[in-house]
Image (cartoon, rainbow, N blue to C red; front, side, top):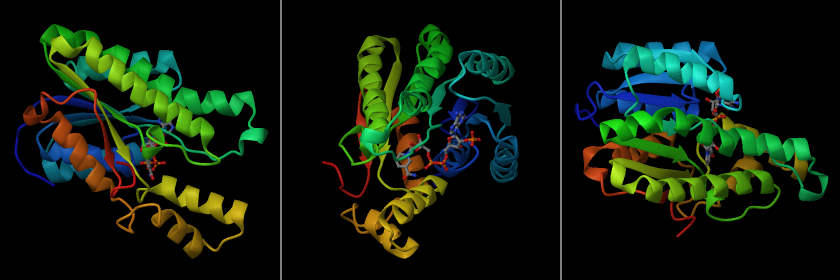
Length: 262
Ligand code: NAP
């Protein structure tokens, strides 16, 4: 965690900011001076995260309930947030869900749910902030994709397709907005120690009959460093992309995965 004030007074909106990677990103951006709007469905988690960041950093931290798959809710939450803390300088599209499903068993509603939460949500949220970013000639959009946005994994085809789509959206927006002062990048974590990983472990236990320890070891082995990624390591990459030093970095999909993808 770095403590300088390079983002002082800048408004950062983080979807899924109540826990896991989103909460780590929120803490890191606040440490660098940003004021935050944390958005998600679980207000208890959002309030707890907001309170602990306010205590440590003294930033303004507001919370908003939204389901990122509902356009009207997204539009309303972003309008409130930007009225209160000003136009967003940073948007981190972090909210997401990963669920396994063997391809032959996959039903259309499952496919559509994965696309809605991991891909369409980023389209909805980016449209709420880009006009003002362009008007001010500056901004940072960081999409939390995944190594599953850069390579394939078995039994999570819908998740992989949605995250590949998110990387594609990132690259396209980066060139569409290249002259505007706005950068658009993706951070692609490998298996990271959050509740999402706990659910992946449970799925391996259920589907392969492994013990929780064996399942965790199986996922850990995917990372050449032989360990899981920490949410704070993902947050550091996001914060760097939001820093003034990264203004020439756009359209990149940066893996934070111990060398799993190259
Ligand atoms: P997590 O602990 O399960 O957190 C997911 C976050 O997304 C929660 O804050 C949740 O908030 C929010 N969210 C989910 N569905 C939502 C919806 N419909 N509307 C609004 N918010 C929603 O998982 P995480 O590991 O921190 O995941 C964060 C991001 O990193 C995801 O995009 C994930 O795909 C990506 N990622 C994670 C890993 C990993 O191994 N952990 C690896 C690669 C990529 P609420 O419950 O409050 O709604």
